[in-house]
Image (tube, rainbow, N blue to C red; front, side):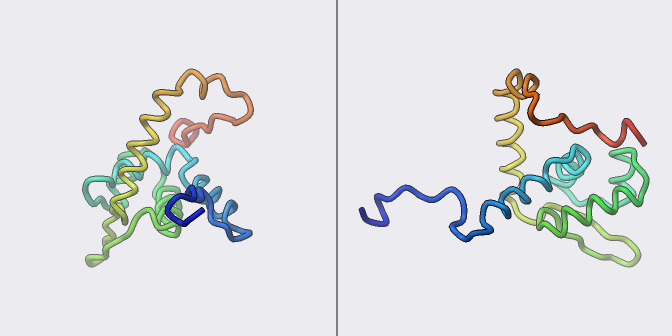
Length: 126
């Protein structure tokens, strides 16, 4: 079997590969982080604008944005006292659109799944 006919590996072959991929998805597994990610998909926003959008305290929003930045989903541009957040890689937008489509197509199965808790949005509890 040649490299051209061999199926592509879905996960990295290194021992930690699947763990890194799982961490990749855990970073997206929080409703607030997803809302923030969608908010900065098409244009830059300041932390203050992000706070207004999700309705959480500035410290919580900054923590979520830091997580998204640490994982490589968003980048920040500093201008004076302000940081402007934006999606760091255009593939993130594709990922979000694909995730929405897959979730919509599998909505009933996802709603019925009892093995994975449905995370609550922090905005409802803060």
